[in-house]
Amino acid sequence: MSVATSYRLRIERKKWRARSIRKSRELSPVANRTAQIKADDILVFATLRNESIRLPYFLEYYRNLGVDHFVFVDNKSDDGGRDYLARQPDVSLWSSKHSYKRSRFGVDWLNYLRMKYAHGHWCLTVDIDEFLIFPFCDSRSLVALTDWLDASSIRSFSAMLLDMYPKGSVDGAPYQAGQNPFEILNWFDSGNYTFKRNNVYGNLWIQGGPRARAFFAQKPERAPALNKTPLVKWDRKYVYTSSTHALLPRGLNLVYDEWGGEKTSGCLMHAKFLDTFGAKAQEELERNEHFANSHEYRAYAANLKDNSELWCKWSEKFINWRQLEMLGLMSKGNWA
Image (tube, rainbow, N blue to C red):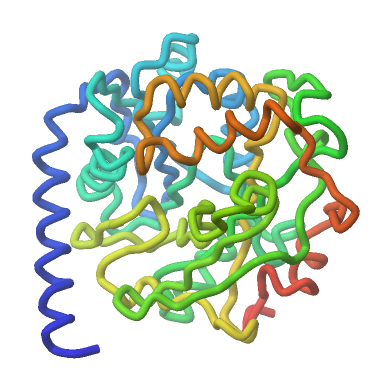
């Protein structure tokens, strides 16, 4: 990386940090329990809107995985989810009535909250429909992973977003609050992915899977990005620049071995395609608060009218993390 590029990225990082401080004025505390956070606690950060049906399992899953405290920003929910979160003893909650789009889709809000409360902590930043799995997660906790990362002087951990879907219509099986969504969404694409290195930020851009083939077949370059770095040993000087796809400093993005080799990584199992998906897609399309004039939700709305089934003859049924490692979608690397 050239000296000029390095200098530009330092300036960019300072700009995003300053912006997050300005945007903090848009946040109102609902239940601030951050005084409870202990030195070694693992934290989850997330933004949400009208996700009450998903919240019970989300909290249960990450508590069982080893998360100690949750920090949420609620953006105009009216389904009872905000009140539900405010009652949880391990949750700190802020709300904002301001534009999700103008906060860079919540990135500014969470950058500020991480800056203020997460310094020195391992932080997991996810959406409410994303569930981290990692090597040995069936027998080892998130604490075991972060302890190994600390011992290996590794500051960030990548996880490819893996879209999960049912066999049959997306709206064919009703989802109940508290239910494991992967009882319904137990299929995925084992291939159909493209990888491209971003030479500026150093991250590996991944696209493909069922959303690319079903909703962006004519323009695959516009399909959602699947590369994420959700788990980071946070420092107040760090910032996410684009969702959890890229961070600054640039070295935090150097988490993938492009040729499927040795760097330890996980997957974020994506529970987007429940029977609630159609209504949620329509709601977000009408709000028009998402990236690039909500082109992703426009594609969902247009294609769901014709076909609501993502399963195909090449789909693979999920078994466990070892299956994903054999397929090259995640790696245990040097962690034995």
